[in-house]
Image 1: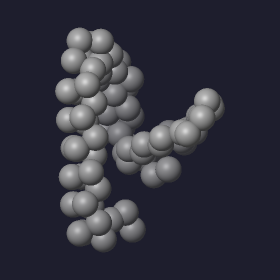
Image 2 (image 1 turned 120 degrees about the horizontal axis):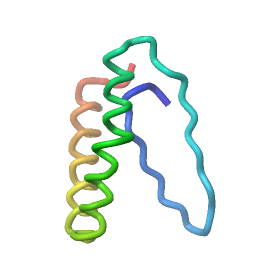
Image 3 (image 1 turned 90 degrees about the vertical axis):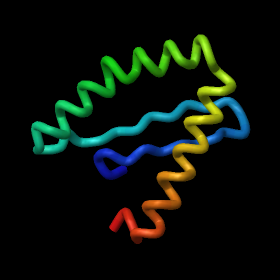
Length: 77
C-alpha cells in the first residue's frame, strides 16, 4: 500500500485484517502520520459515536469522489 493512500474493504463474514507499511523517509509524511494517529483518529471516533450513519455515508461518498478524481489523473502510478 503506497504511503498516503487510503483503502477500504468490506468483509462478507467475520475476519481480521492488518495493513503494514514502512515509514516514509520524509519528515512531512511522518508528521502527517502522527496527526492521523492522534487528532484525526479521535475526531473520527467522536463523529462515529455521535453521527454514525450520516458520517459514514459522507466518508464513503468522499472516498468515491477522490477515487474517481485519481482515476481521471491516472493515479496512482
